Image 1: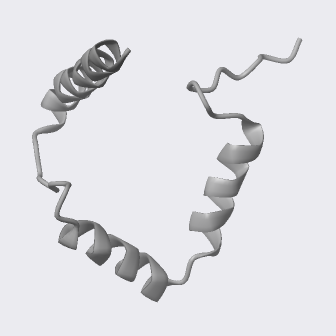
Image 2: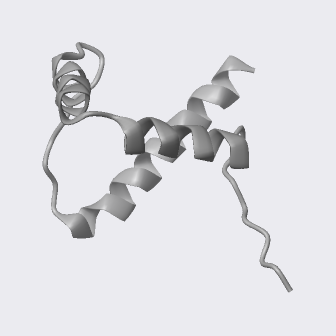
Length: 73
């Protein structure tokens, strides 16, 4: 019996394959340029955090996104 993969809302197998294709075919120079652009972004912050905090941070981000959706409706 084949296990069905669950994708996040808005994602499907084709989208996952497209993202994999993007990163697997990217040159090292393209990858560096993409990373540097992320660091220069003015509406995002890149920071190093202890791995043990990642689940809590992810939960906070998800909660904030859900709160914004509720207020927008």
